[in-house]
Length: 287
Ligand code: SF4
Image (tube, rainbow, N blue to C red; front, side, top):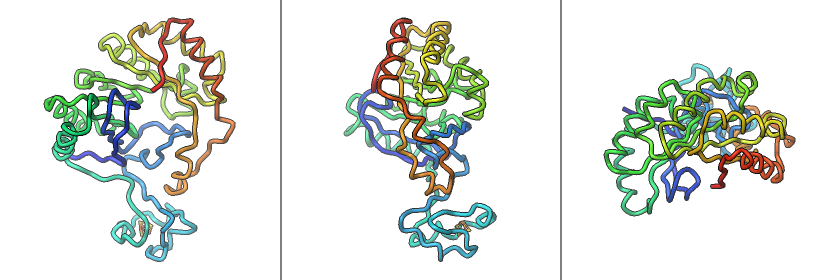
């Protein structure tokens, strides 16, 4: 079975404990406008331009000012991606699960140093069957596994026994607001977080703080109320400030970036959230 991923590389301690080999799997079912990885959103992938893109290779005249006109592009068999000089590439590569496992094993001796492999996205559960196979094979090889996901998938609990360290997002406590901005309600997210909190020890819940969406003092109290009700004593919480690291990639993916500077929160906002969580006996961390 094959997996599509749009990025792989090492980081230390940000996506699970220790030194980690991180695979970003292609495709996401949500449409959060602040996403820093727009190239990872469509499951079918996206064509990406670069500073060196040369539109003259396109027989349909679909490339103009470094962007691709999707309507003109439709139906082409991607002639550009077969010509390196075009400066256009597909967002993902496809690789057999067994080949990924072999690579992870080869890294495990030299580089992990108490870490392991993290599978993130995009949303990794969109490739559920291949993801499950990969987690099973990594566990069989005694490699520490971490999964970072948006917790929307119905079958997520099947992956709990295969995952040593689980990281889930929770972007909003209110189902309607979540649906309006992110494209799906939060019912499954709350259900999966509740189950995970009861069934497992290591769970990190990340909340991206976006001004005008979920970053007011009232929002902090509502989040804290939700997690108190769920009873997530063994969980840790982390607040992530909105940033624009992915902004340039939107142009390279010929997508529109709709966020504005107003979405940024101050460091004090994070401190306020941490204080309110502490008052509710919820433990926060920074990775
Ligand atoms: S896939 Fe590439 S070559 Fe084909 S129309 Fe689109 S930009 Fe042009």
